[in-house]
Amino acid sequence: GLTPAAVSHQIKEIEDQLDLVLFTRTSRTIRLTEAGDVLFEASVDALDLLGRAVTRARKMGRGTALLKITLDAQFATKWLMRRVDDFRKQRPGIELRFDIASKLRDFDRDDVDVGIRFGAGKYPGLCADRLFE
Image 1: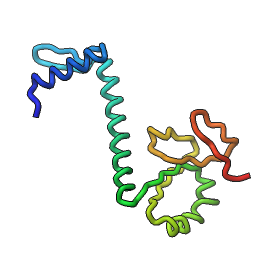
Image 2: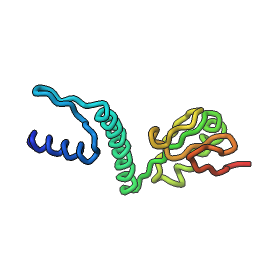
Image 3: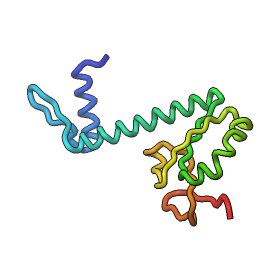
Image 4: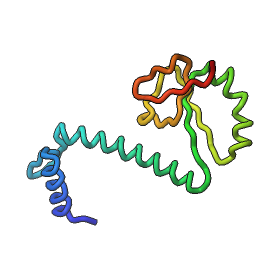
C-alpha cells in the first residue's frame, strides 16, 4: 500500500521525466489527458505482451515450450497436418498452436512465433527462408 500522496508524487515524477501532463486534476476528479490515454493504452498492450512472454518462459523452464504458427488453410490441410503427429512424438516438450489465416500477422501483436506462407518471401520487416522449391 501506497498513500495517495505517495502515488501523486510518483505520478508527478513520471510527468516531469516525460515532460508531459498525464492527468487533469480538479478538486473532485482526476482524468487522463489525451497523452495519458495514449500511454495508458500502450502500457496495457505492453503488459499483456510481457505477461504472455513470462508464461511462455515459465513453460520453457518446466520443459514445455509453446510454438505458435500462423499459416494459410491450404498449406495446413495439404501438407502440415499430416506431419503434426510425427512432430509431437519426436518433440513431446513442444506444444503446437496454429493460427489459420490468409493474411500475414503482426508477430508481436498477434503473439505468433513463425509464419508459413506461399510466395517469393518478400515480407518487409521479417526474415524469410525458402522451405520448398
